[in-house]
Image (tube, rainbow, N blue to C red):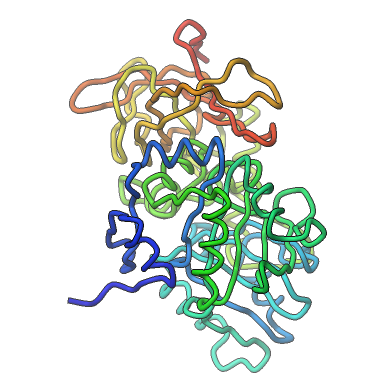
Length: 418
């Protein structure tokens, strides 16, 4: 049996009594003693501390690095000034996702690409195939040299400000970067994350420095969070997971990139990109999406289904692969991710309204549905042989009211059909 890989923080997880699991050949914490629900709620109310060192990290340098990134990624890497980052997708000629990724531009002469752990080897081979023997591009595998720690939640900035001079934090606004020093340790800081929190940071440090950085953040209030709550947090925020909302659908078909709602942030047709990989297919998908949004369904062949959030209106948990039907019992798609998630009750909806001391649970999911299904449509989800009511919604969480992300609850009395 192959021994599981361990992050530089493995000993910290074990010491905290974490339940460790095999995740993409890594020995990772699923949850700590308090459990997934407590970790989810702590992130939404205070600050969650995540070990994400299992993610793949590639460094691109050389005169041809930018040209390769413009060709191989869907977004416009040329738009990044040093100190900026962007969400992007690694695509094929058919306009389908090989992986989704984040591109960071800390230095003038290099780029850092973070990819999914399970796809690291596949992605590495793909980039090597695009530039065999090229002296113009140097691609370095840095996954075993650089650790990643994520701090997410309303108190995240306050915690970081207590150990990093405010002048060295990234300027406000998602995707900004900075170089800083934390109690004598060099750390690269990004305003990025995978939880839907408006205050979010990811830190890049040398492997040998990761335990010290973890201890500093934990001592100031960062609550350790495992993979279980990381998944419920991203699901509540309607963020895609490769293999669920990107890649192959439950029927075994490769999903078009524009089936994923985040494609509007991840795909650029800027002139600087030229004739990049998959451009023709992505243009067709983009045009089809525009028509669909205008209730013109004449190009559904290019984008037959789209991923949408659902609010399940009964106490039933929809899981990946569950069938979805319209009100007439006709099949319209499948659940791609689903579970029961906790949320803090809030006294009222408002920019500065914080959570109360009470929480509840609610079932939500993401589903890939026929593209002509509109928001606020009542559908049926098959759960253990029974169809339960659900509603297509624009979102289940709003994160545009810092410092808190707020759950959006769709009451049965407000149900409507389209």
